[in-house]
View: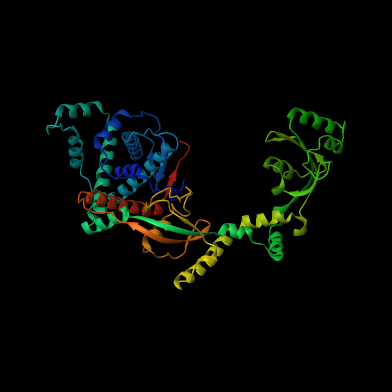
Length: 477
């Protein structure tokens, strides 16, 4: 799996809290416990993926395993028992955390040296009781019961943990934002706005346009082999047993295909004899029919019965050809396939043209009514990044959920209209009607805001590091 796909989207408060937990210190005692309990002896440890050649192990003591179990427990602490798609989300987050941990470890190893004494001290610190007294007996027992392999693995895990925590402190936690910056961030995250969105469905506009004959002819000539045609006759019967019996009669010559078609005429073809004429693969009733017909090199033959959608089809293949001219192909088929192949470029070009026109109109304070914008107002004030924004009819506000939507909605001044933004398959403008700013009176909120900013800085570093790394994900563990 490519690294480009493991990008976290905006989450609800529960998931944001879990995401922050991933960048906190990993419990060394938990690692030691997993290492002792989760020994695999001579078995081969499964690998879930690799980062720059370094394996990510599918075990409880690995960065992946620790993160996965932490997330499970944190969901449960919120009263949520993860199942189904939620487990897949946890898996993706844990894998991302493992990738991040390995990348940080590699960076730290180039710049930091951890002494053996420091590792021993870190290990011993986990055997200090609540009274602050080191328990030598428990520590000695642990050393006796652990194999040499366990001890080596523990040492490596501790070293990696110390390296990651050290480099995290240097990279992220020293960049603690000032109180003024934190207040600005708090205001940004907690301001609510009411907006009206005007939208033009460019995709629908492009698909409804007429295409001139010259364009269609050029498209056909450049793609002739995609429009191979088969001349077929077809009989459709609801009962598969009757279809098999009729097929055997036609094969044996007991009844001709034409007579069988007339006796079982269902209106599928234009004529009672079942003749459909020349059609392309795009015009067949199902992919099964298309696969059977267009994989044949022989013609003038009865094909085996095809079963699909509770209907059985008996097909006679008369001929196969590559049409010489576009006029031999169904006009609607050509138009649809032209759009399917060129939709992206056509839509983007039209979006650019419309955005340019709207941009000029907004700068000149011209009314936008003549451009065919469809307007919709949010049902209630919303936060930056809030999901599931709807209008008064409980219909989704177009473009909400995309970063560009929130950027424009919260950067445009109240009472003004944004510059055109290109989203999905259309172009939109956002008019900000009102806003509600938070009353920042609780100084205790500063800490959580500053931590959120540190997390954001950490995630930005992770995103950039992932783009540069060579990451492979094994999905068939």
